[in-house]
Length: 383
Image (cartoon, rainbow, N blue to C red; front, side, top):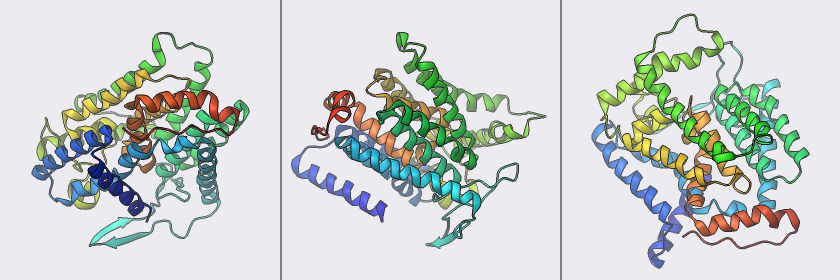
């Protein structure tokens, strides 16, 4: 129902734009990019429904571009809502630790396709991977991390920030999602170092480029050096990516796609799982997924994000910076872009970073309005 509502909202916006001849430029560019790569997909994918399913997967990206600024029109209300959502996500994981929910492992069939509603699984040590009220453990971990990150950047009192950040650590650990656990630790390290080391020469912004470089280099190196022995058990899943998953991803692109154009939108990831299961590759790396879906242009898209992130102010635009930091850090081992919350926040970033008026108002809001009184400023409509 929520997805249908979001699609209706986006459709209404497009209809209104056609009538008024006024459209969000970022939204238009992303639409054109998606159309181009959907056309590419028609030449390489087994099922024309795959690019259509990919559009559905990225629906929240478009919503974030168009309406992400709404979250800041009344920051107090957003903080309350996100706090409630965070509590629900945390409590879901904690309750799930003591009780197995009856819907765990639920699957259903739709149009002849088996769909996993809630994943039930264990890690390499045989420990249950807790999903709480989410569809999978990694979804729960992402929800907790990103909601906590948003609140950390916008809460007023430092004590509240620290307590909240420490309290979300146990439920994140209970999900056993290593990529999010590592991202949480890196963010914690950033919070500590940033208070001591000044941002000379925008060294923190340059970390985005360093992280992205790691995201790209690791899978490429795995094609050359992909045989390992005597690996510690807790690192086994990572080295399985290096020795098996990533080389197989590149083989899929080479044999069933194009080294220049990739496989087209939906060529790797969730849509492939449902419509091309015999060739399914999860694309457990942000660069690999982008390369499969967008070809070499996917690398350009990723560097565009990192380069645009260089202009972010760490005081008034801290959340957008830390979101990108998390996006790339988690992207080393998993492509978080297919997660709904990651997707929506990415859309928010794209809609924000290309709107000078919105950035100006946001800086003023973050520095004065919500901290002092209940006065509100009207944010500009998307341009």
